[in-house]
Length: 301
Image 1 (spheres, one colour):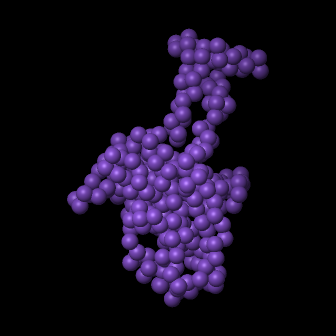
Image 2: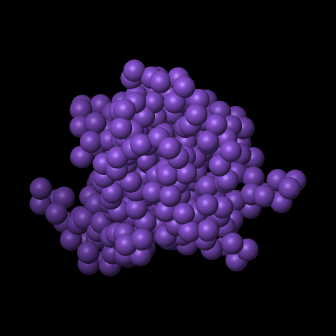
């Protein structure tokens, strides 16, 4: 799977910093990439909202990295969704999966119950591949299981960075994704308590992210609303897209890792193989002749 063409054109992220240099923020629209991911995984509405929030969070968290670095987010709870895994890089590429896509849990008010679907007990694990020998990994307990608050809790608890995160996904009655996006705001040292308090008041009084996106708000519009009369500069604008790193060559390496005996058994029992990527749903088919070629390459080596 390559880049999702629609999302590459219309989904994007911006990064800003206040003129005083004490607050940085990011905002993004991810409607098309979230919709593409949900179609590929066949998610029901609540699973779509949960996966969409996690993918959007991945785009925002990935944008905090340096070029060449990657991040993985794993939300694991005791609810019917079981687990959500998202991987993202510093360039706006993201992919993800939800372990049980067939979840459509509603709250008493009729809204999608993401927290109940993920489960109130569980963990968020964040793994950053910084190009070192081992990735940096931190784990916190799920805070509210609403995804956004869990990411903010992780940043505050594990990385000691006061942060606010807002994520939203609006799913239509027919199951399609009508809007998705979010923001991430972080205080930079030295902190300005009065400025932070003003921003928290604005966040508390702002309409839901999904409502703003459905009425045409852009990433710039989200941050202009939040920062209001606080001057800031836009440092960067980049596309965001659903991109999977799977390939036929990678699947061949997986098959080769089975060893000659296992490949021989596969050829004898099935005469072919079809391997699917759990992130994007792409299937790679191998004929008997192709499997024999792979096995013979092991024997020759």
